[in-house]
Image (cartoon, rainbow, N blue to C red; front, side, top):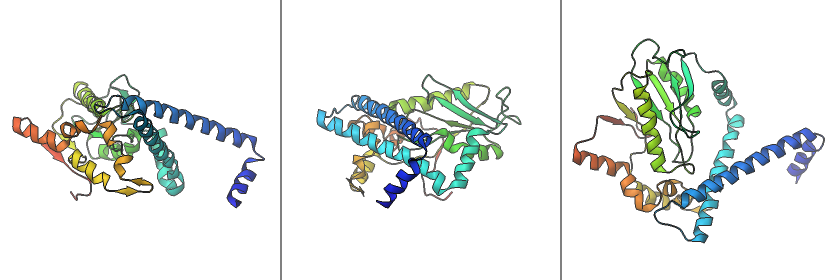
Length: 274
């Protein structure tokens, strides 16, 4: 009760504060509505279609989780103010050897930030360099290239030309769209003068079997959810469980080995000391 009264006292004498909060609330409701619409559209693409009731529940559940996580990002300013300030500086002031928001496709998330280049002509600063294409994670539904700007800056100081890419994530895209975006971004890096050649590819990801991981998630309990698979975006992002096997990293690598088409790759899962 005391907290509610304090909030009312804080708001009462300041109409501008109330207006600002109302504007923020309106914008948040707008993004919530857009997210719900996107969830609905992508759920309709599933190979294993849901009944109407289950479809509505799934769309509401994924929207709730997505908006909850999105809103929690603002807590960074309170928990880690210095880190938040550094990230804010990164958003405003890019290093002189960086180019941001280079488009590689029509979608608003089809952009890439480059580090270690001359801003004028896009060539690698200091001559030819190894190229690293950084694909951020985020459980198929979250993440943004700006969050890894500090990574790009640091790697550029180590003599690399770094391309940190954005790509469509659930619910704006399925795993098919994600793969297409990463392929297009990598192709653009190869074709443009920012990279004369790519010697190799370093992948940092979760090299697990998707079906096994789904079983693992179904046995975990988080808050009111009996099984993380109920709130995980993995199933809808894969367009249903029927696609688990053909989209699983372990299955893809096994099939590629049989055809002899596996290039040299360095895969580093999380938690492994290098």
